[in-house]
Image (cartoon, rainbow, N blue to C red; front, side):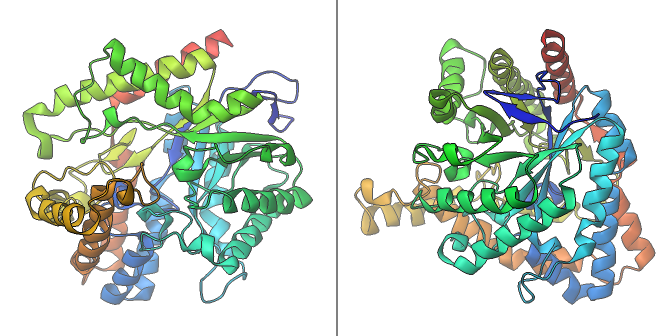
Length: 479
């Protein structure tokens, strides 16, 4: 390969001007660990702190380093490429590169595993996109910004914003000559309640990166979890070589769906309407669109029992119908996600591994309590929380309009109650229980547990991978 990718009108092209359609997955749950993907409660910095308390800092760091090593190795890159996919979006947490108590001092060891995986992908002809999934202070209101709160404090502290700009200067300097890095995704899923600060920040990030790196594509997520560009105005005129990231999750792919998806005309119309609304701003201006996240979650026999096959066939149909829309538009996409412990990944950790055996009962409890936000099934706990929701809607904010706190409508009032009471409060009380499973483990035992995440110890979600391969081939053949 002899050239960087670049944006030309609505397309990504190579150095010869030939169209390149990026088709791949997100490497989530790795350099930005997530509770549903990795099996812990709460958010990443909390479990790292708790494990250090239980087994000591040295052993804790040993375990997490081994986890990072085994989670993505050459076998993973080889398998990924075998499916006909050509791009991995790598989610990273800023904490790998600086400490809150030592800001703007680069931790060079943060590049150790990131460089390793980018180089492995390059070896197999796989592009990578570096995604800052977690910014200082938390750029959004959800657990995956690793802030431990439902307040996106990033937007109200200039110091947090300055630190993110500084971090991207470090990334730009480090990767400016790497042509297998397709580009940079400077911020995952911002939730700026004023809708203007995100545009001003993107201006700063653009100028800071471009002073160092004029070549890589910049992928800008829309506001409100990469769904809303309506307040961006003509900001794009200031941003060079840029594409715009939507996240096109469909409610039909999750347990709380209004109905089982069967591909009716009305259901397909809803899929397309949601997708087209997200990309409307770009369409009006003739800009390049990238779908940085999408995809259903899947039922598991230990929780959904005999209904598992029926549910998952329905989810695969959602997948196929979304891809039919994307193929028509020749859209670049990155499904969420490559690897986890069995909820959404293309490959997932076997239940027969040491990690899954160790945490089997805890994972069942966490599922029953709906302690994670992502794809939660609240059937068991709904009778507990519904009276609180009813009380708030009756006694506190009887006016529906008053219930529209940002990020409404993505979060409605019941979602806000769930985030604060279950996903934050209850999860805090589960942190120690998770960490105690590791008490007394030797380094050899910790290494064995971490090896659970090796490709050889994972199962393949064949139904999902078959659909992805067929569609990747379809788009490639039509290019």
